Length: 223
Image (cartoon, rainbow, N blue to C red; front, top):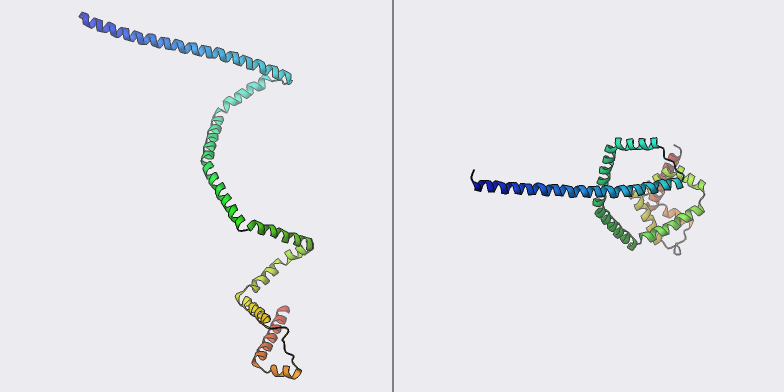
């Protein structure tokens, strides 16, 4: 082996030795840091322990070592459950972060809708409606409301029948005719004139309607 190869190997060994020494030095520094940290933690832990013991004595609280041991064992046994809880808690936090913008949009839309309803006087309408309810409460007794509840089906059926198109048309025509007839200009009829009018087709149709109506009403009441 020539002298040049020997020098190369010696340089390589020196480099490796430097790396080893640097690694050992780093480990020494880390060990010192850990030792300092342990020392500091021990001091802080001792201070916390002493303060806790003093506070427990001031509060007259006694700790059962067996219960404390059982608590530690339960904590160790339920580490998996605690991990699951923390994962669930993290998922909830993520969900709340994603829900935040959606909630803001909902609040903005709700505010706009409330403003729109206010502009359309919905709130004023419901405010006046409460006065109507107050009048109902003041003028009707609980017995009246009870009777209303007992007959609500019949009332709804009556309203349903009244709101049929043909019934509404008939009522509308009757109202129009009543409004067009002047009560101050109604002519006076003698008996002979009444008998003469009864011979007209219109009166015959009216009398036929009244007779048919009365017969049908009586037949319905007798059922």
